[in-house]
Length: 70
Image 1 (tube, rainbow, N blue to C red):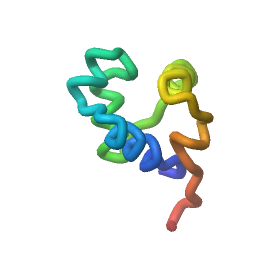
Image 2: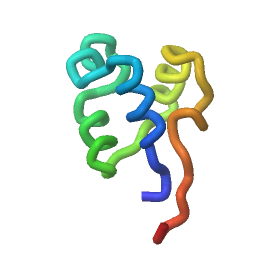
Image 3: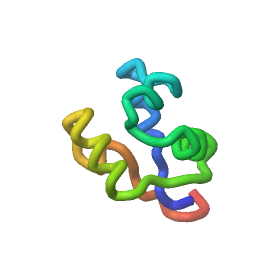
């Protein structure tokens, strides 16, 4: 997958967000979080907006483009 969400996963961890807290705060769906952790999913614009508002950041702080094969 060319979009990597390692930055988001690190941000969530640094701010004490586990799967339980993500579900309680409605940051994203449980299936979305699991897919991100497994590297098989992505985020829609609405979720990106919600995350940016929560963490006062820009989309580039959550994800990065990585060329295929790297």
